[in-house]
Amino acid sequence: MTDEAKDKLKNPFKGYLANLKKHKSAVNPVHEIVNCYYKMNGWEKMPK
Image (cartoon, rainbow, N blue to C red):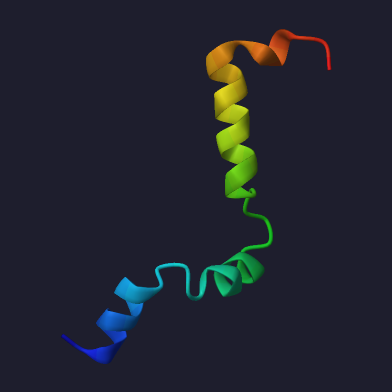
């Protein structure tokens, strides 16, 4: 196994922030999860 592969296993989030900066138009993944959760529970119909 190469050092690079070991690095990836050690820290899968390495370079994640760099990727986020590259794709500024990308939706925040946490936001996406919350939105899906709201839709699943039908909460988006509730008054804010």
